[in-house]
Length: 428
Ligand SMILES: [Zn+2]
Image 1: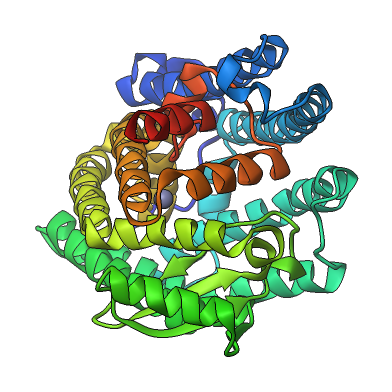
Image 2: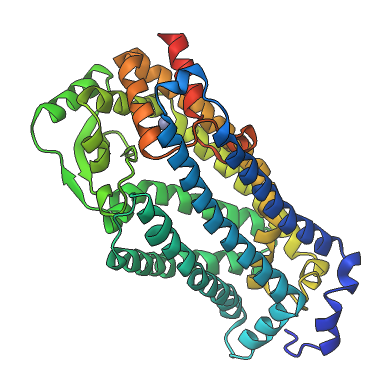
């Protein structure tokens, strides 16, 4: 039976007396640690805009671009920092004032079954959190991105995207969440079942995303007959890469940033080019970028990344099992009993530093894959057009010319431009 009444003493106790609880200390260190590490990395990174440019990058970034990139990074970092500090304060306030125990009691009083009580508790937190994040997203899109000329999202698209995202969450996320919670409520081998289910779900999603989900947000138009289509099909044939169709995605509806494109899974691939990419690049450059993406497929990078992801989630579910089996884990957040929905949310807080640490492995692997795909493209199309394309992408998207190694290690899935150019020069 759940304890609905929260004794006032518990509420006041959770700020002080639980310091002897290892879960409480771990959560505190985890939350504050990740926040400060990110802050330090951001400050170090911002300070590197004033460094003199190495010879290789001198012709790429002029003084004006570096200045603009520094301002852009500063503004973006300010939005992120204010948002993170706001959520950190809110979390600690909620935690130390006994807010989670209050929420737990409130949701329990609605008379739902145990499973739906748990789903609802975590659902309430997620909905409130997304609503509170909205002003920050709007500030970023219509403030910072617009100020630097990147934004093309209209308020209608902005709101439409969020509504579609919310509906997808309801249709896909809630049943999966309920299933995972049901495993932990009823099955002794819950971690294993949950891992199998979530893994199967992610694989299905990876398959569905380009076919069903992305078309909900973006418009795909077949690339008409012409020299570009002929050249793309020619390249694909030369590289023995079976292509089912080539389409153009209207990335320009949201941002002027030229994102690369993606290729679908399966026997015959679907190539989708962002219209912003086509707009700004010559045919040779487009083919080089395309060859880079084909390289990822040919070198089997996606299965490797998926395998790393599955191993990581196996570890995560095992740790989740340890946490949810410990009464002290729930006490650390001021709640009694075993409200699994809230427990799942508490666990995400604790998991942050470990997730970050594991992320280092997968992003290091991803940066390695980028070098390999670059080498593949250089072999297929010579390195010159790829180098031009990379330079254009970096300057137009106002990338950092010389990001700090800490930021690269923590967050970069792609190597910095300088390193990629150096590697391509060695191949040429
Ligand atoms: Zn790549």
